[in-house]
Image (cartoon, rainbow, N blue to C red; front, side):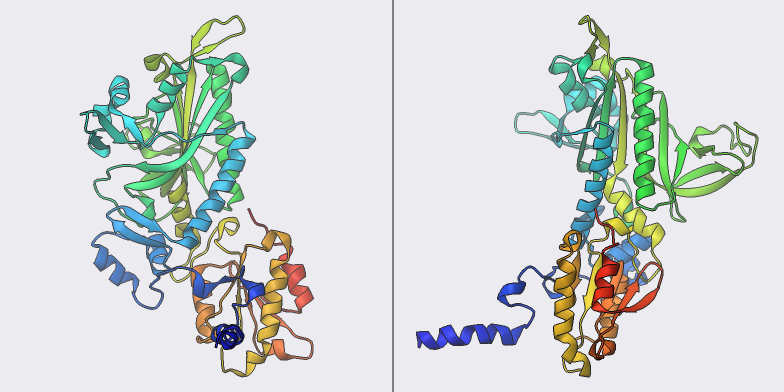
Amino acid sequence: MVRLLRISLPHLVASRNHYHNAGQRSRHLVSKIYNPGNLWKESPSELQQKSNEPTSRSQRLMTKAGLIQPSSPGCFHYMPYTVRAMEKLIRLVDHVMKEIGGQKMDMTTLCSAALWKQSGRWDLVGKELFCLMDRHNQEYCLGPTHEESVTHLVATEGGISQKQLPLLLYQITRKFRDEKRPCFGLLRGREFYMKDMYTFDMTEEAAYQTYNNVCKAYCKLFHTLGLKYVKVQADTGNIGGKTSHEYHLPARIGEDRLMVCGSCDFAANVETLKDEEENCPVCSGKLVESKGIEIGHTFYLGTKYSLVFNAVCYDSQSKPTIAEMGCYGIGISRLLAASIEVLSTEEDIHWPGLIAPYQICLIPPKKGSKEIAALPAAEELYDAICAVHHLRDEVVLDDRDYLTIGKRLREAHMMGYPYIIIVGKKALDSSPQFEVQNHKTGEVQFLSKEGVLSFVQEIQVV
């Protein structure tokens, strides 16, 4: 009886799913990816009625595709596809920040109320803070930003020597803000991911140089993602400081009003202009109003926080000087959603190519169809593409062969895979051909296996 089981079990497993044999355990199979989506269930209007709040294109698409699932108002679970995209975006941000000397760290989420009271922001920010008290009656907030924490850290560690300057410390963590009216999914939530950087310099001149370097890095990042952004002069708000710029993606649902000059590169948030100016203060050109989604913000703080906490820099003679500071934020989860908002259609997601969860979706024939004879060719092609070093983790095989190719193709477009490869009738020809679709351009090519492998070599990944 034991011998019978040993012989029969492998055949039993193979008969259940031909995609799961011992040599193919590393394959990314759609059937195995946890993705509780609503692709064929809810319409956009039904989603808005259920949430009882304004929705955005990105929220509707991400919810329908199962990329996010609501937990409570303004809070979402991130599903595996979204986590992959977020990790790629974070790798890009890390690369750009480290190019300018950024050092990554991770500060505590629980922030001492005493520090916030010392800076004067405990009452200034007020109800937007998630506040709590521990069993020892000590007050804290869940950090929406970390100026107080990082400045206190530098001060208590004895300051910064000249050799360490400029000092650029950043983190990418969850942040919390008690939004009065969260809406638009990840675009305005109560819990979100943010990259926040804090810089320290000896002089104002050096601090402005650091400020400009970070601004250039932001522009490089958004350009690399293929996003059409606008950099605008902005109010410093409750963060404070002397200079501030915002980075926006123009969008119909944007909550910021921007005034952009048609004659020069001047642009500003309307809140920084006086008396609803219609002409550009730089060149007198006509200002045109548009709406934008804020994806990044830079501040030159001066000594606003360093003076309060006595954070100093030491020159070559060990003479202390109050540090000149800057702070720089990028809404990571907001940038992800805003990218989908501005690049996608009403029906299909379009990711910035570099951060798509998977670069390629391969669709084999339907079970029971005439094309099923091409299944071995589909599996061989999948494995060959994965053998291309930079694509080994970038290909997903839609093994749900109980669905037609057409239905899986529609879903693949909706999910936003940059490239879709279909193994259909032409794969049965004496010289097999595979259909390759470019999701962004709509271009369709029929290529041999060698042609496909040559084509995918050019796909860029993070």
